[in-house]
Length: 191
Figure (spheres, one colour):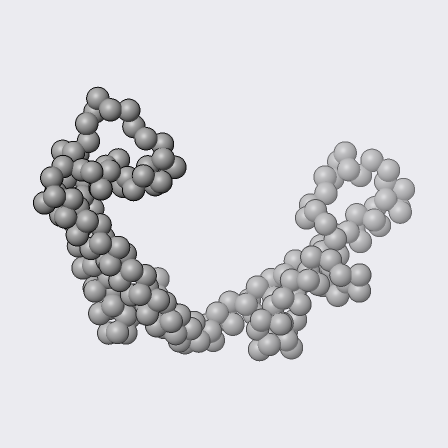
């Protein structure tokens, strides 16, 4: 398997992202811990719509939860969570173009090797088409020669479908070759 070294900028941003994600996990755990102390299990739970309308977050009415200090702590934690979530989005926006550029460079680097594989595929499909045509002609000659029950004694070896290399009516091979030569012009002469 081929491996490619990530550029330092991506490694740095991924490390930063991981640090922010860990901090966000800690903040969410702290929110959950504080909220679990405030939820009165004897009161019926609010629906999500009711909760949002009343300012209830994670099952806790932050406007009326506990004392002033607890409300302030929860408010600070919720704000910190929002800030961290936005930071993750921003880091992701910065990482994506760098990763895309890295992936493109890696693909361009291995393209010649992949072209060789494509050439082998084209040769193999071309050989399969030739063998398929030969099998079809052989079978038809037997039928044309008066062997009516050829299928009983010589079951067909053909692939389903009509495997023709140069089918003027299209077909699966025609469309595949079009895809190959459009995306890999280096293989056009072979296709």
